[in-house]
Length: 78
Image (cartoon, rainbow, N blue to C red; front, side, top):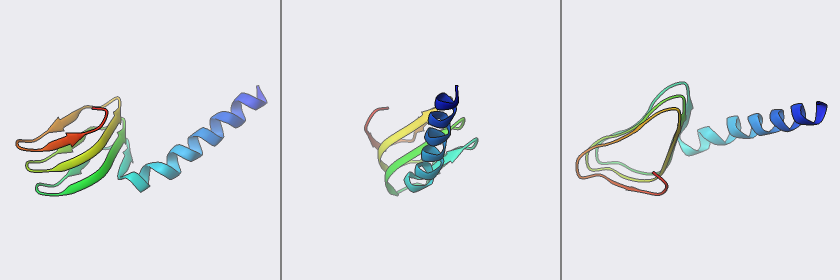
């Protein structure tokens, strides 16, 4: 039981440290403004909202949706 708690704690800390580096959020949506280019956007319990004319690589969400605006380019595992 102690080993499982340690693995969970390490995993949680890793996620919390890595998400902000990739434009991530927890319990809120991530918005990419019109005309921008981004290498990654992620959210846990929120959406990834992509405006018009955006180039975005690797959007990810857990328990949220990914909305893509007109003439936007999204690459990765959508």
